Every structure is written in C-alpha cells, then in structure tokens.
Image 1 (spheres, rainbow, N blue to C red):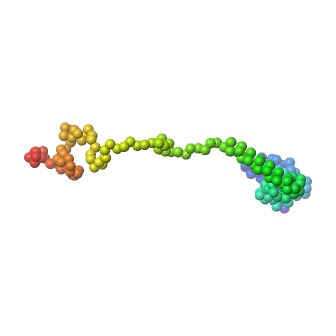
Image 2: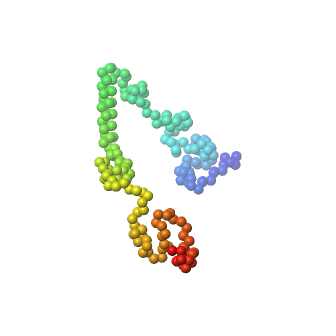
Length: 187
C-alpha cells in the first residue's frame, strides 16, 4: 500500500507536463475514483489526443485515419449525396473530371522551373556544334625531339656534361668520376 500512497518524482525534463497534470491529481485518488499511480501508468485522457473515447484510439491505425475514399467508391458517392445517376450525368462528370485534370496539369507544368542544363564545362565550351578542326599541314612525328632553347644551345651551355652522340639514348655518365687528364687524352 505504500506504493499507492507515494507520488512519483518528476523527471528532470518532464516538469512542464507534470505541472499541467497537477490540478488533475488531487491526493491519492482522482475524482473518477482511479488511483494516481494508475494514471501515471496509463496516462491522462485528453492530454495527447482530442478523442476522449480510448476504445477508438486503441483500434485506430494511421492508414485508417488518413484514408480518403476514392472518387469511384460507394463511400464517396454517399458523401456526395447521390446515387449512380444516368448515363448522361456520368458522361458529363467524366468530361468535367478530365477538363479539371487537364487544367490542373497545365498549372503544374507552368509552375515547374525550366529543366536544368546538365552540361559539363567541356561539353559546353569545347564541344560546340558545327566545329570543324583545321586540316593538318604535316604529319607530326612523335619520335622527333622537340625544338627547344636547350637543344639548340647544348654545346654552349657551361657546367653540363658533354654529349658524345645525340642519337644515343641516355646512359650512365662516368665523366663525373673520371679524372680530367684522362678525359682530355680520350678525345
């Protein structure tokens, strides 16, 4: 019985809800005769939902609550206040639905932003339509050495090891470790 008479302590971040429930809990028993401890377990009616009948909330589902009947269902026809109607009435309704649907579709299409142009910089700037490349004046030989300042002035540059033969590939140069007298006599 000690558990029924003691009031539970307020949680640190739950004090706002507890203060709102304070007037509902007068003593150990509520006006309807239920124990306060039972209310803390089950909860107060009407605080989290506007439905006072708890049986509807126990059986309600999200899809059931948010369901709207389709245009062609019997529920919708009953809500509209009519039965089946004649052939002409049904035909006029279908035409009206199509007209409203096309108008709404036009409004939606007008409200949509223009399609974004997904082109890379290369496609946009360098692959322009109608571009005709120039004809080649001569076929480039990739085995030729390019004409550079260093290639033309190779013999007049100081501090560079001598080139014996320009056609030979690069090999180890022993001229750095060979004494100068011996190099002079070899030439």
